[in-house]
Length: 146
Image (cartoon, rainbow, N blue to C red; front, side, top):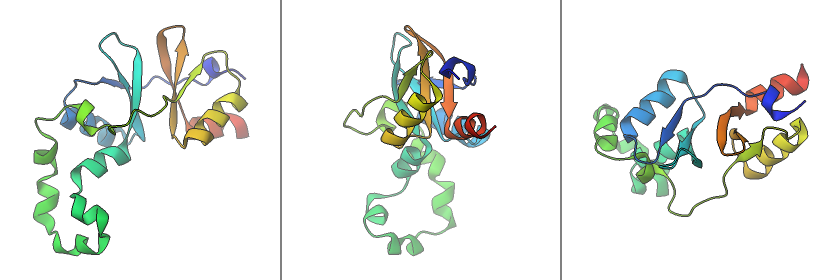
């Protein structure tokens, strides 16, 4: 089985897209992440939902999770405010990680190897310079076990 036969249509966002809109897209569709494209529409990175969470949780709470108890329900109400006015670019890690991409003709094992090595819940599938869609870990398992 080749990657092109496992591809799912999937929302894509760009580096300069609104961070709040991207977070809402992740939340509304319960996505593990989004493919982020550069100005020319080529894949740039994967924005994992966990990266959005990391952006909204204060650094002092990340450093000491026991402090989470000091945050009240009003904190949850301020999540949208924290993302408002920011771009997707600002949510991404400063160090550019290797991009989780596979070729449309890659086999299921090649796709699984990239996903496992990069610990990424989805990979972008390219046909030349075009993004065909993505393969999620759950889709990969469905095809592999089916």
